[in-house]
Length: 70
Image 1 (cartoon, rainbow, N blue to C red):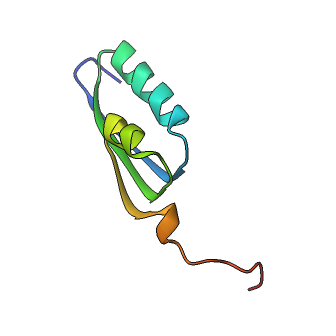
Image 2 (cartoon, rainbow, N blue to C red):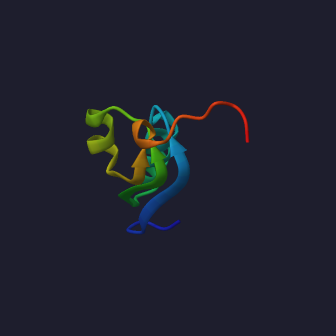
């Protein structure tokens, strides 16, 4: 990564946002620009979602219930 690079984190599931926050810190320490976080399932609190720039396909609350059987 070089100073000025834009970084978008892509992940399958975000729960607390702590790993994304750590990644953003590293990006910014290297002189990069945090573009946001793109995930399939979002389980973060609204304030954390806005702070990290999270964009998701669904929230955890929107997932159908699973009874443990296939």
